[in-house]
Image (cartoon, rainbow, N blue to C red; front, side, top):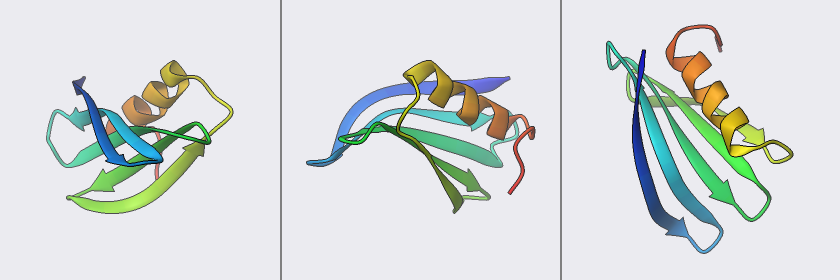
Length: 77
């Protein structure tokens, strides 16, 4: 299970944080952003950013699936 925190925080003119998802053990997390190009997902492990997934041609639900798969350990670096 993944915890989802919904947000609409403007990070910059081109980037808005729309949600954060955190794994149950709190070791992994993912932040989903809406950018001018589309969605981006930042993946974190032990509070260190390990990867950015550019989901520019995909939907918000696809970006959420990426975040959830990361938190469940399905996606590996």
